Image (cartoon, rainbow, N blue to C red; front, side):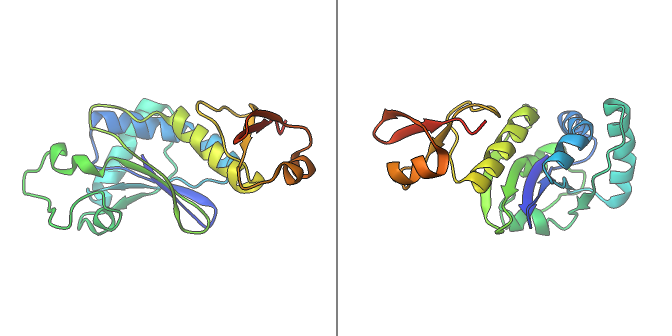
Length: 193
């Protein structure tokens, strides 16, 4: 799953159909349907295969996930979308008899904000499945940052302390957040719980 967010909704993208790692990834994406809905996030896939192939592949995804993959998959057979998002170089093409290695660099995750600006990108090799717990965690952090004007520390999880940006004075931080902890002059934390 690669992803993007447009108008406050997130979308996702991936490479070729009938690849083992991607099948497990799309299965998890299907299983997370309620989590995407809770976050007002719409998932969309992209693959360089045809609509006909996507329909066949969705049967495999459903068999693995034990639920219906209700998200659309873009048929990027001409590589226009993959190239527009710099997932493949401009000179890339799909050779006859291609293998998944021909589209390996398409394996990116994007989250684009409601302002249509890239907020996050991750690129994975073909041999490493995407960590959807991290994708959801990052989406939560981005949405919280956008709503509350805070930042999140390393390994942050929902409900934990967040960071008050250095652009906010101590006086404004106290007015906005109440009591907060100063760890270093430039590192102030508060719990929004």
